[in-house]
Length: 280
Image 1 (cartoon, rainbow, N blue to C red):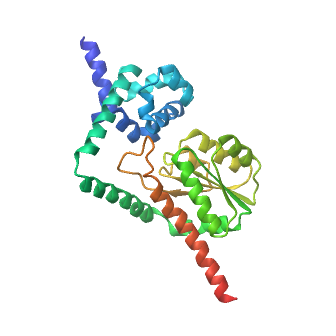
Image 2: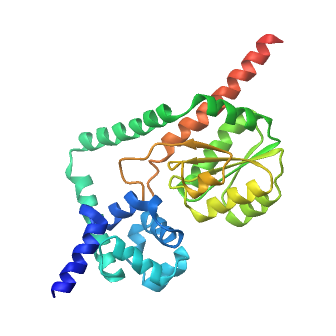
Image 3: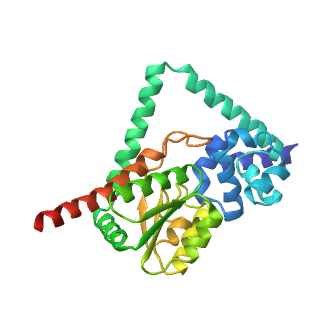
């Protein structure tokens, strides 16, 4: 019994004070996990309400991580195994749901507005204008720009494509990973590729940018983690602020901060076009 107690304490120490909240643990440590565990963690963070209904085998197939890796992830988050992890996950989701419903509607709405506004402000403060201008200059010279992201980042990719197209660039968003890989492999030094991932470790997105880089394209990563695997495949990294509110299970609260970057790039292109028009 004493040995079991010590083991449990070790797991809780490992997961910290949020050990009983596996989702919070995964959100906080996503960037620190090895690839096999990270793949499982990303799937859990993005689909927690589905995971509580899956078997270990089903989750393994869906996130492409081995069952042993998933069990190690559960233990790192403070659970004995996958069954206990699902119970803790369900409890945390219920607690978060009650917390969202318990506040006065106006108070909850204001908190959401404050956090979304803060994410935009923090992103603006972190942007290096010199780098942003350099990225914009390279994109403006590209014969084509292919943009890829998974999940909500795929929606952001489409918004980027729309805005850059309206600014006069030949930009295209790709949502299908098979097509994205085929396109990336066919790019050259006159092309550009933009990959979007908040965590910077989404496997398909990292692979897309890697393929584009190896093909000779100019590569840009848009992520919250400047030292992530995605960032390491990029010629330039534009960093977004991390959210202080949940960004899982269908939430689209990651969009505003990314829209800021798209508008900033398009704004620089528009300004250059106006200057050129005025000088003619």
